[in-house]
Amino acid sequence: MAMMRLTAYERADRDDCLRLFDSNVPFFFAASERAEFTEFLDKLPGVYLVGRINGGLVAAGGHAPNGAQPGVWTLCWGMVERRRHRQGLGRALLEARLRLIAADPDAVAVTLSTSQHSTGFFEHLGFRVEKIVPQGFAADIDQYDLRLDRAELIARFG
Image (cartoon, rainbow, N blue to C red):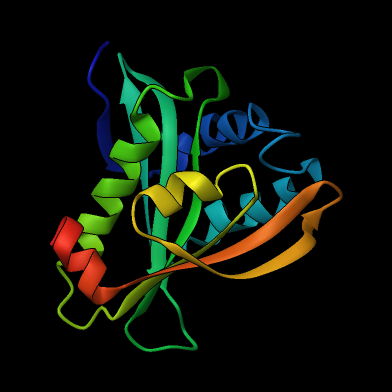
């Protein structure tokens, strides 16, 4: 398999990112979340990376400071093109983001909200579930809030 190349999101990536999102509806994202994702792309509160293989956009994900908690970073809108799941792309994207966060000496933790369909992926990499909100994203899509503390972040990615 070809190597994925990660670069910073640019405005020209917007339509490809929306196609990536659409490829994950309805199992991983609800169609109703598309407007929120579009607004996120238009305002970018932090770093957002896109991954390409042979020029085609196949993954995207970012991280931003959690404004309410100093030193806490939040992972934002991570996704892999649906037909490319289970090929290691999500892990490569996540590890790249966590290495960037681990380089911040003030980072104390990383948080994210995901669905029941992705929670195991994050738990396997050291995240722990802090809260579950049944149907928190949409009907049939529960919200799982997860956290990775600094010690685990540095041990794995620092």
